[in-house]
Length: 197
Image: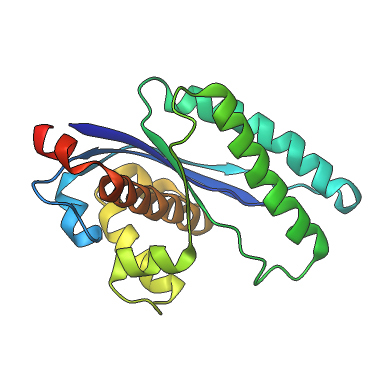
């Protein structure tokens, strides 16, 4: 059995997206190490989404999120199993406009996801601490440590090297979110169905 997972790292300046095809391993995976041999990267991109006008930033973010949803629909194609995004945290957002526009972006993407796709409940919001724990095995891992683990895997794809460093960072975040989403999906999967897969 195979999952097709879309990970998205929505941001005001850049948005990373990554599509994975993940095979079900013999046992339920607890972290990235358990799952890495069963992951194939289908596609990744980094979209530039910077909004210049501060006065209309929240409205523009809402409009942009619907534009992104259209692009996501075209990118994901058919048979998408689930979407994984980062659970928003206001920490680190120093400007009110950033605080406002980021949840608006995520909220609108969530809404459009439910409107467009067949399985609206398969939307996973992943907390940053979950990403750190599942990717590195350390609850207090730094962002650099998470990036290093994701980069090590993504470097197998020669196209990753053509991205700028900032683009690589967003794609790596999207990859990590997709991995964590797949792990959570497999954790929630009913045992009787797991045994029959």
